[in-house]
Image (cartoon, rainbow, N blue to C red; front, side):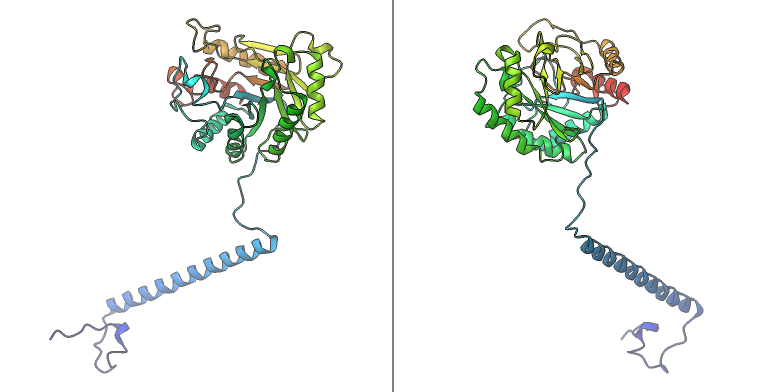
Length: 338
């Protein structure tokens, strides 16, 4: 029978008289193992003390868990924002002359929304102005999702209220109800604010491009939102004025409305037209961005981030790829806005 090998850790099984004398090499190894075990125990003990201290400190402060991502502070003037369209896949059934780098995505996909926010932040934007067509619409269902994605990255979102562009705009009662619903969403930290007031853009055209419509919108607002309305002929002469004005004509490469807003468009090529109304020219786009920055306008806007049906997007596309991966137009914005 093979004799069992004994070491210094076999003392309970071997008498002192029977244990062979350890060589100096063995003694060194034994001591080394012992020291290492003692060192490990000391490290574990120190870690437990630190963890216990953190738990006690959190309990003392009333913390209930990990701290959520911090939201960026309310942006200062100028505020740089792009009009955003959570319309897909139903919007024009994805009819477009271009191919987004993300493919023909679903605007309800949280990964798509997170990517869009990251791309906008890279470009130097402060916010999206997200198309909103009223309660019960896909845009209404997706607005909270976009707010959540923005909040996770310290970004901001305002709504672009579009029912005022309909041939039969909402009644005064429905208008107030829509504003009530939107105002509830402003409790989310990502909602864009100016001087503490939540921002709401309005696309008022047709019969709503008038001074009486301005008065109607202000009455429905009841002082809750910072209102930014679309301009129309004679808008400066209206007795009642909103907080600010903007223009939305992306077939024009550049528009400037005094200190209120300056808007830049990369191009306009509608999905059902064979000739662009505004041809894309990255050099012109960058020059217009520089005009915008030097304009002194409080709102510095881009039409648009992803209106693919009208072909006005600056979102990365297979048609304007760049080494950065963000595409020619976001690269230009990042260069000018930084």
